[in-house]
Image (tube, rainbow, N blue to C red; front, side):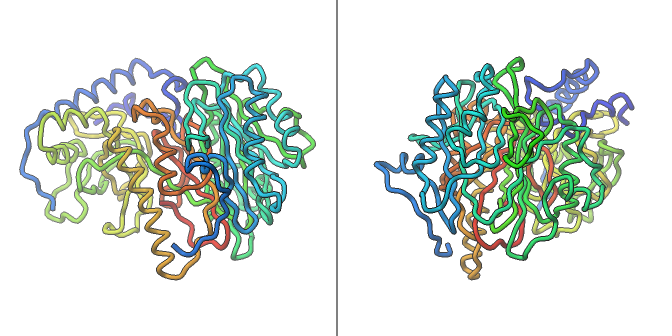
Length: 522
């Protein structure tokens, strides 16, 4: 069995997705455990193969005609039922000029008949740190109609340009989004660690804290965009509280990041109706939450960047906190219970060559299904929460993972690599389009998509795909709407109606106008 010291090497839930440059240094014990884990995996990978015992609805949208398809995407706003959403990214090294460029481009693409923009989101490079206190005042002077603004720094920022969606990494850039959302109640709320209620506080407590009503007309929805600093250690309580108080609401977002470990991070939150705030809106810590309530909703797409190691799903028979001790194969009554290390060896043997087994051994993760009742035949990628394997016991065969696991939970071994990330994002985008097609065939209206927010891990991008803007451009292939976001220090998204903090994930929120259907993620 794993020693108590080894079991304690499990990091807190909120730390799993923290940037490689900014996460706390591992202790010598943890480093030794992880090194030993890699050794165990390589030993498993070298085992020879064994016998395998497995068995559109008519949408209306206005798009201004431009000189080319790329320019059209960069300089248009989508309009539906009076909603408009426009984004633009500038690479100008001077933040004043960057705000001027992006605000002019967004405003020029919006229809004057829809009204003036009242909501803004921006994502800025940390290279603008000398002028952080001027960003919101300058933005308000350029777009005086704004009532709510949130923003943050990012390792990279995402926005539309003349070349299409762009992820600008490690260099000066500012992405701006302007929105016109008639009939939608919007709040921008900043909170510190000390202010967050207990996760199991009454619904009325959360309603008062979030300034967002629980009761709504049947044709209205609630959505939350959460942007938090990595020092905000109450993130798990916040997400659990939002899930409890607003179970039907969508939640999407990410952790603030910066270009380097020493670069300055910042978070901004400003509302015209709040008197107890500074004009610059800078919040050096905590979390900012933008809530939307009305005839608009955010549909989450959460791609965790993994592919299954094998076809097998395992059921946890014995565990203690985050340590799994015994599992058995789901739908395999003749199989006996076995240590999870033996189950992993079984799945590794499904690979045909030693080289394949050695390649995946450095990228293994574990997927846990939060929903205990969904039928096995209906489980898909979006029903599993990905967590890291943080240790193994070669004698007893136990495995420690970065999440508390209960008896009866269903798990799968997964591989996180470039091909897995591409395959996973493609599968989620296809599932999204299939859902649209199914709704169209059934005569249901999902409402018009008019914008997208992208929160993708700073471990993806050029570091993973060896090319820029892969995530944002792949999303644009399937959902051609104005998009913006940033490369995060950890991503927030829903899996099986439970909101969690993820790592190496691309979390997308698609904004839709009109009547909503059943909430869920693709």
